[in-house]
Length: 251
Image (cartoon, rainbow, N blue to C red; front, side):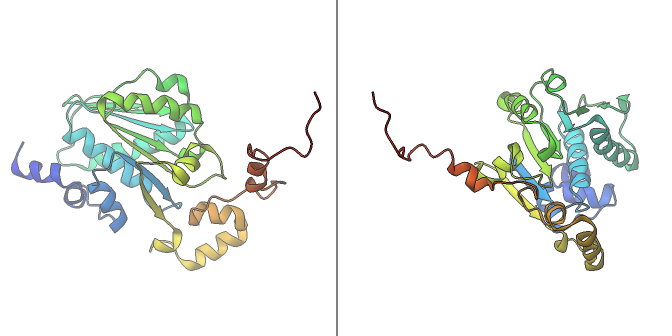
């Protein structure tokens, strides 16, 4: 490993700029340099979270020999989109890193690192162990059973887990971890913080999508469904175990 590779290994942001020609936004640079093992990305559409994840996965694969990187999404098509971003970045490198295996679902690099794209089914997840990095894309739309299958994999490897998504109502593991989970680095990026998204476009989106969907997709709000008859607070009050009954049953 030459001196430049040592520098690139230590600074993925510099590597991203010089080797990939990609200049990250400040929040993207912070994530690429972050040592945190658990990260929640509540980032709006077109904020660049998928691009950042692909760069982080490729950097891990190249500079941590023997790594296993898993890309998980609700569907195989979505996982393949993220994997394609990584492959495109790998092809941009000079020279492009040699791969002993390279197909639409996975890649194995000469340093024995593997990147695998998986659909969001519990049965496809459980066959893997000790990953260095797991990306759960569209986490708010992944089944909770997938999340519970992922976490034990990291027990030995102390690998990184990144959940990234826009909200999808007030339910599921992404919502729960964002609201009350411990040990997470939380990153929230709203559409008005992304210079590439114009205010005119956002006005059109609000008019087209409606307030409920717009607030979720572009401002990262966990909002209750518009057709929900009872509020979440009302439902929670129904399960108050400290309330006394109005009358006692006679024995």
